[in-house]
Image (tube, helix red, strand yellow):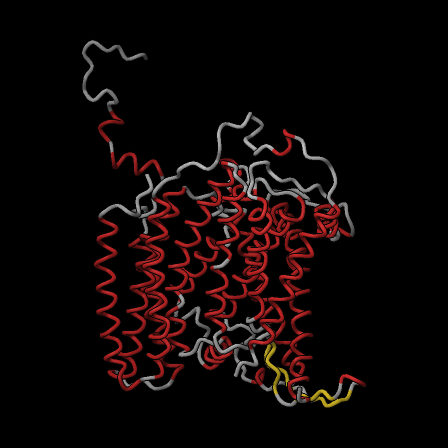
Length: 121
Length: 423
């Protein structure tokens, strides 16, 4: 039962070892010295203005919130889709259930659209 | 350990090493291919000095990247700055573990290798590193972990370009992940299982899913472009605006690891398109490829390779053909077009399956797939002809004209008294 997962664990260990090897090798073989100009953040060659830890647009938070909502819908749909083919004798009921679910989702979706959450300009 | 488990482990380790090597070498060669393809399309020669026709260029680049100086921005968070390339490298290379690359091979051996003991294997060996029953969910779960590496890289560099690139990449990837997840539901509706081997078997039994689920294929392909941050959706690293986006501050091998991760993701998306919509290793018009005989296995592997390679080439082709989207166009395409179309398509396909099985009494899977092909064809034509004619994703010119026609025609708003307009 759990046997197919052993190669995945092996692969994870192998890939992590490779990542550490790559980073380590590069660190060991690296040369040169750190100067103030070299370690300054790149701003197209101009003197650095302020810090990058500033506030950014609230739109990005909004996208993250919407993502959580809609991705959970996708997660709910996956078991439904698998069951739809396997429980063929109640597939009419399953279809109506999903229709209700999608209609509720669509109401929220239209609300979000009308409130302008998808507008970026 | 019993001999069967030992035989299984031996095969797993061999398959793992082979697949890992092939993916890494393939990624190295893809960087060369990308430069060659771009050269062909722009009437240049591309790299042709190192090795035969430039064949050793990736090796030279790799060596150079290992030997280059590591830079750390002074204000960066050092731990996260180091961790970020690994965080995008690891998931990208784990994905190749669950995608079947050839038909199962019939393999029987029973030998004793000195102090290691006896190794036994009988029957069909699936040609995939890990034949997990949740292969499909594994890909969805692990591919979304790539976001962490990019978001961390953008934030930890403490550079404005990196931060903007990281933010854009995160928002774009999570937006298109929704459409991608939804577009794959119809595949599960038809296959009834989440393991890749059963999805491929269902396709070899009926039609390749690109026909009955054409819109799913289209949405998945577009989302795949966005998920891998490739043109026309490469806003996270738009060089004319953000230098190199989230990896502006990275040098040497850390930069290389982001690069490897991007190309490994391209390989995975191409392999996923080939597996989910073009039958994977399935050789068309025959079922003999499932027999496990070695020459059919080799042929099926060549089929898988050819399909995957075509989609890799297609992604490069698009990159050197189409210009970049604007950010609001990108978000509008994901949220206002692909997501509702994918949702509606799920309902249409499930409704059509129900109608075919219970109302029309169709029992043969092949007939059902053909009927769904007709439905998808009609829907595809509708979607492309009616829905998207600059209504949702529009250029700046029509949008400005629609919004403020009077202002454009007369920028002073009708007030001409006392104001001299320079001619």
